Image: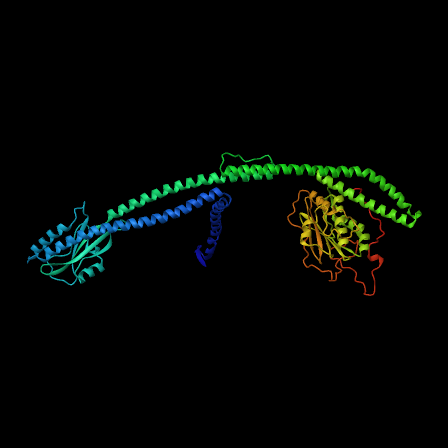
Length: 602
């Protein structure tokens, strides 16, 4: 829609729709202003039992008072009207009958005498304005002519006050008829009652004689009663509200105190108790709550003492065993090195002893690391490190084990690197644990290791296509000394502490270690770490659950290079002819030197 404004020489079109655009923000501001108090009331309603109880009581009481008030008002109005109507009916019947007999028996023959008779007769019908408030209306019935007396009305009335249906009833039949009407001027209406009958006035003409009663006194009485009931209802509502508040507060306040005390106890303030006074049900509730809190405090204290003793026992035993274990290990190494000079049975015993002592050493190192975590003395040594380098070292270390199991380890990592502030030693230990677990449970299937990053986090996933895990196993896989199948033969690790230590290492980094698995499909372990110590993890760069889970029977693709290689994104492996077998150059050399592990990682 366009309009034009004169500029002196030409008409410039002006789009008037631009004036409608500012209305939208005003609407949204108004909507926001309305929403805030509504949300505040809703939150208060949901969070405060006392508020909800009092408001509900006042609401239901108000509805009951409104219903009772409406019923009483209707009954009172009906009673007042019928009482006044019965009184008016008797008065009007007596007055109309008397006036009709006087007028019908009159023997006047001229206009003046007839008018005088009518005036004197109607004067007796008009009320005195004090005890009786009524007026009269006299109007000829339509069709009569040659009238001695014209239309008449007392007070401020006119013939228009007579309803048409009442006039028709009076003109048609002999009798007394009535109607309810409204009197007064516009804006000041009050109820009234009109009663009429047909009379004959010389020279034998028919008139309608009506008595009009003012019912404003009845209306005033009803209004006074309604005001009295409204005031009484408001007072009663206030009393009920106060009673509801007092009763609800008596019941709700101990509950609120119990909630506050329970929150403080949950926060570690075990000495907090409820205040108890009296001997009623609430007092018994407080006494029982305090007894429960005291019992919990005793149990928690006992458990803490037992846990502290257990942690100290593990720490002390681990440290005490290091010295004799070192001596025994040195002797075992000497015997193991000289096993070629022994008979076959003794040489085999020397090998078994050496292997079990090595395993015992690993278990002791795990226990020492766990004791450090329990004592809270484990610290991070952060430094900017490329995750590609750490994962590459782990893959080189795990290659001989993967070859023994018949698996290959495939890596997908960003070519530009993935740098984050981490503790390289701890992260390498976590990755070594996850990769070796994947190899051990991978059932000779490939192991996929993927590295990803976003603006605030880095992630590594280790995916195997082996036996997988159930949903219940995923919940407990990081628990200490937990195994999905305790009877299953194991050749690496075996302490049940590796994944729990890995979880503690990741927690030191303020990161996340998560597991997904499905029986017969495989499992995925995902590490998500913040890029720097000040970053917060909003989301992981890599998904935990595979988009399309592969089963053991499905062929595995060649989208990743073979073991030990660190490719760029988009790497395309060399496709060999079907008759050829991959040569030694395609697989990382198992005999390549492996970086020695630190004493804590052995």
